Length: 284
Image 1 (spheres, rainbow, N blue to C red):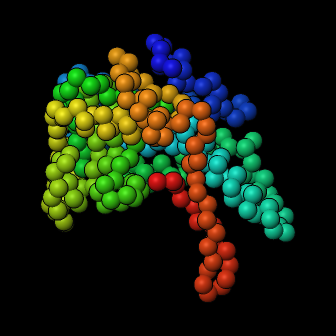
Image 2: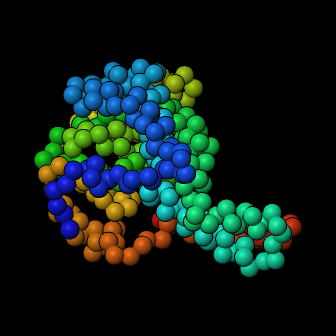
């Protein structure tokens, strides 16, 4: 169902990061405050020059890294992963240390677990984002860009969507007509412009932000489909351009009624020790 609503009324969950008397949301607010003037400047002037400034790019990279890890979608992914690992481990006679570990994987500790992941992994992801090829996509079509409750989405024409993978595309919509696109800097000079870079040429490629006018509505619809696919509960549009949603539901890109599977678990054997190896992956 689509309807008019203030994003703040439905995109925020009270005490989502509160543990006891500690509210970690306040520390996240600092990164939002640092990034907000840069995003407002991009929205107003649509110029790439602010993104060539090291401080600005650092602030946005930190903001996007924390944004990626702090979502409800990430919490659901961690919870599903923990649950599957826990069920597997409980099939064995466990030591006290292992029992304590399984207890920590329980849902009651999910907030603490997610906060630990944010603290441990934000630095690495910030580095990955900072050293991408930054492109400012300018939507010149009549189709507005969506955003969602999980707004940083990835695509790779070759399949693997790891942040450090070759040919990775990372999209972050700023407003209905503007989107940040971060690309593998060894293979792209601009959005949809393949070119091999090495050494100093790659460094120069990274340091220069470029823009790209998107005049083909199918390209905007493609980004919107990614946002719809990875949304948890909410997709947002300024002008309610949700015509594509029924097709996405029909093709099972979006399933509004059933919890989607976020983590696949596979038990492999170490060929030398014969020990089990827990292999986790995401559905394609």
